[in-house]
Image (cartoon, rainbow, N blue to C red; front, side, top):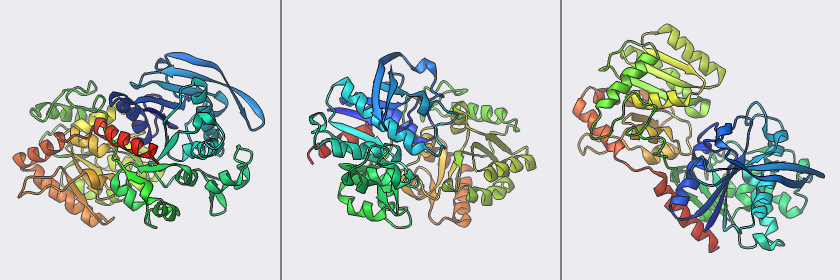
Amino acid sequence: MRVAVISSEAVPYSKTGGLADVAGALPKALKRAGADSVLITPCYLQTKGEFIWSTAIEDLWLEWRGRSYRAKAFYSEANGSPTFLIDAPEFFHRDSIYGFTEDYERFAFFNHAALVLLKRVGKKIDIVHLNDWHCGFAAVKLAHLRFWDVFWKDTRTVFSVHNLAYQGGFGSGELWDLGFGSRFEQDHFAFEGYASAMKAGLSASDMLSTVSPTYGVEIQRSENGYGLDWLLRARSSRLSGITNGVDYEVWNPETDELLAANYSWQDLSGKRTCKRELLDQFSLPVDLDTPVFGTVSRLTSQKGIELIQQVAGEIINLGAYFIALGSGDRSYEDFFQRLRNAAPGQVGFFRGYNEDLAHTIEAGADLFLMPSRFEPCGLNQMYSLRYGTVPIVRAVGGLHDTIHNFDRVSGQGNGFKFGPFSAGPFLEKIYEAVFAFAEPETWRAIQVNGMKEDHSWENAAQKYIGLYKYTLQL
């Protein structure tokens, strides 16, 4: 089976969020599982040169919008799988990956280039796996091409929703100029008087997937469907939820080279060394018997930061440490900085993102906070499980699927979760967790329960291969 994964970002080449982790890890896992997988992603200004191994195609000529464009395709296997990076400076050499008024145009071009590249390479593709709104254009184009281009006749598409809130909307009048002139194509994009690339992907693809079973149910409801719940309900028989995996070559406390000490569930002594290192890095007094609450997050309303704001004072009153890493909404950034200034002996805050520090927090913290409004899958709670850092989460999306409340009677469970989006239930779980932390044997049991779980990409890849096989039978 030959699978092409197309994504607007993928580690290690580019990253703004969890999509990059998934797109970087899945092709590698598919390859290990026996699939002939290839990844296609843009080559951005931010893509590090050491990840580019060679130039695969010097003259990738594209006819688009009445012009001829000459792009390049670089080749790499820096993520463990064959990868083509499409280099088109006019579209991708910018100060940031997203955030431009013509993003829809940039990714329509990328989709067009990716399909031209696949045909240029010459091997027929069984499955084209598209990710989020940035790839909705290719879903429509392939649905159209199958009618008249024998190369694509047997190719099937899988479209994965990573976050339905971002839909790639733009004016319907742009469709003709982007190469979607037929009524068949335009109908796929049409959504409430404008064009939506997300809606196009959901409408035109052969099979749909989301990044957790619970999120797959949630987005079929009006409160979480962002106007597309009706379409997802209509296509529910072709909608599958597969929880993302964790790349244990990167996120594994036994081998993580970014840690002050390595450790495992059999021997957790190194975690105390990592806790000391974390407190040192934030210039906090070293008290290894005091709980450390950590969070690594985009500072947005989606992540439930307002709930953290509401309980932060109580965490400080408990005498605990609180350490945050993230950037986003300026008001949230300023809040964490004020909290740091008010309690410099208990609070640490790094404004921005730092991969090394993210590993340090995962290893050094005792508890990890994720009180999200919605969370399609989430990865940090699964990183936390592996690192023996007990998650406190809201029971939504992938958080609900992966975190199970600890039960003192049975000894089962790997963390703490609450339901209503309210500070009261969140604080109750914080108190419950702190109470458990004060009992070393209980705490170790919770840690070991989580550390022994297998959330590897190998498991997820087998589920995707099953989905691909089913799609090919449609």
